[in-house]
Length: 343
Image (cartoon, rainbow, N blue to C red):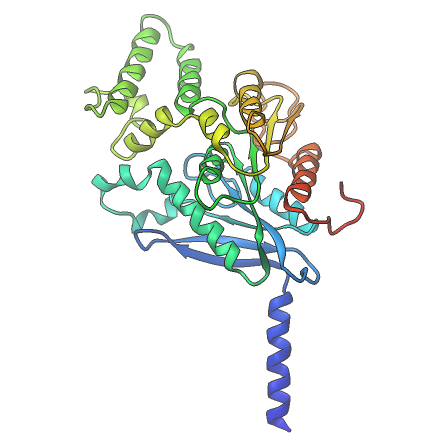
């Protein structure tokens, strides 16, 4: 009798684990053996026979973690998106990027870090995350998409140009110009507060350093103190990628349905210079669907703002952005909302 009871309990535990909802801590290895940590968030209730539709969430530039946070800058943008999607029947995986500082003790030697942080290495990580999702028994491998925020939108486009593209790609506040162009725009705006001739001198140094990186030449020496966090041995690889990776070319070659969603009050990515050409490039593809959405009054992190001086980090992701993303994903992944009232 005790043996029979043990077998029954074991079977019940196995079934419960398959039906378990909520966050599941995961990790996966990258090429150096470093383990990237993340969270798989499953919807509540019984999964469809083929498994849940799912998305891989990709964070923006820098040492950004699975929630969309970076050091003291806490936005929670990816966590909030994951929670909203799970409530509507879409699973998600998000992870701490290789550039998150808590991994630093396991980094390769200093002279190898420029290659370690190349844009393609982040794409490789995303591909591993997507493969992990497709192999999970709770997930329908045919309905795995990707949602990229900011730089993550460029990674999503690179995945959509690959041999094993996602089923759908959502680009949230993604650039339509090379990231280096936007970086230059932001740095020059800060330097404009400096008096002449310092202002022009510092701008010239920035351009000289970017040209040297593009051409594989040594950096100017000496560099001003303010620029050393931008130009150093760890950043030369990705700064070259920022100059040579064109989102519009990627958009024209991307496979599958694509959502281009930008924010009207974004002070980092422009509606006119980024969203409009990106949406046009995506729409120019033959035989692939696209949708373009602008969320008025929202920041780069899709938070409500009332004036340009508001950094737009705090608070909830605006409902309009969640509604647009959620509704489009259900259409693109061919799934029904868990809540019939959802769009």
